[in-house]
Length: 331
Image 1 (tube, helix red, strand yellow):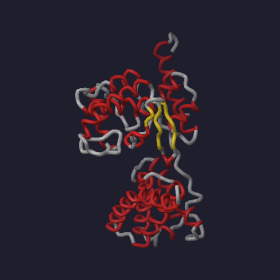
Image 2 (cartoon, helix red, strand yellow):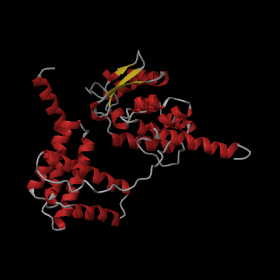
Image 3 (cartoon, rainbow, N blue to C red):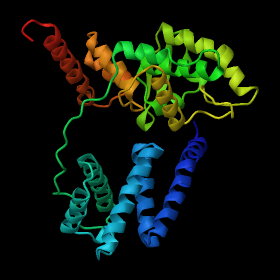
Image 4 (cartoon, rainbow, N blue to C red):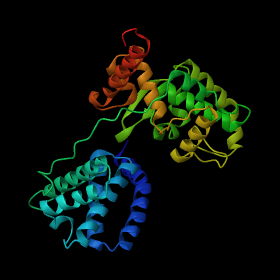
């Protein structure tokens, strides 16, 4: 790809993020942040996006955290992020504890500040990093919520197959459980990412990293069925790049699919609280329960670190302990 095409691609990719940034800037101005502070946060966002290829959602989270901190500093007599001292940042993080926010929120805010000040030092915008010696709050390691294999079967069978929407939802649920994709990866799929003959899907994950994931015979069958009938009915001749469209001719959003999952879970009689990642967790947990190698699960999930995947060994161990306690005479 020549330089002009690369530049065009980058500009196109950044367009939606920039629009989001404009909206955020408007909110921040309403909160009374100076223009210089807004521009500083935008500069950091531009730099970290170019360095790490972050998603729009992650970038939005960083900007939101920095605006929140800048606003707090302003209300408490500090001239801005570049003038903040270590005691002031400690007071800011302590205020979050006083408000009974979750430790994970405080840890995320501190992580954002650390990245911001490392960037500011590289740019020679500040001499010292006031976040350098601040300890992150200790986090427990919550086990991911999952479903039993019987509950997954009930959820998969919940959509009404007499409607095009039902066919689409069944295909989406089958793909989600067969591959362990993130919901954002699922709703972002396009037809040319499928290799149904080979039983593979090419997934573009976090940071633009690509991976090939097996689909399995069942999800391939449902995809073929949906593409042949349901997708055509939903689009009714409208052009759409998304594999899973709505009747409006647009791709389904994460929020809309999450609403659909909750609706189908209710119909399936599943009463436990679900999250958008529930089927992803079920995919990984069931693989580990059936003896899959952890590094294979890591590769399929698109985790950059094996330590992230190791949480599923704890899930499997808990299940074994529960089965032992229930069924063993000396449990």
